[in-house]
Length: 247
Image (cartoon, rainbow, N blue to C red):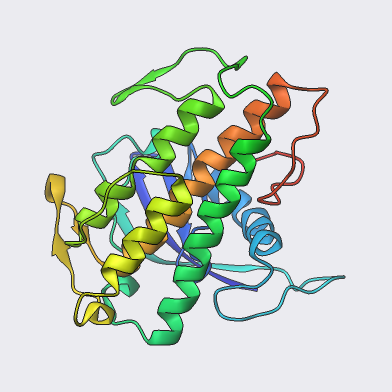
């Protein structure tokens, strides 16, 4: 298994993303910590989607050891420890084929649908044992309801960065699907132009699709772990295949 990684960091704090398993990521207080987690993260990601973004079927039994290669580095001034990010992958500047688009669209919609299913499985949407914690952008979402609303409500923000008119109305799946419908009415959207968006950050369609899947995965992990702690007697479905929760 070859895992190509983009390394974004602020000092030692690290976000490591795969650019060939779109949406898979790890965080760590050092690059080495994040690297140690990456093979397990990709295996979890493959269990979730059942197939890699390259069409490589998931197989049982012994697996070849992962070869992890850092193909791009971005030094950031953002709070990487809180998963703030502004990197544009070099590969996110390339045009999309129809097949690539349909595959990434399918993953983004599956991710939204699975996130909604996980949220709906939480017994009490407003209960959490997690302590209050603040970051540069405000209080970290603690309850399932807060995590869901936060994750859903980037819909308008992400789409608008590439000129797609969108809103946050309806479920996370409904509003994301509506964004795709609007996008597909725009001439030449597969050319994947690069846009100068908010906060001097560059965006493209490929980046939007990656950010949706990545952002869902961040908060699905948080919601799943919170639910296991808050509702130890409940059966919380491991929809995203996180396994033992060591993330």
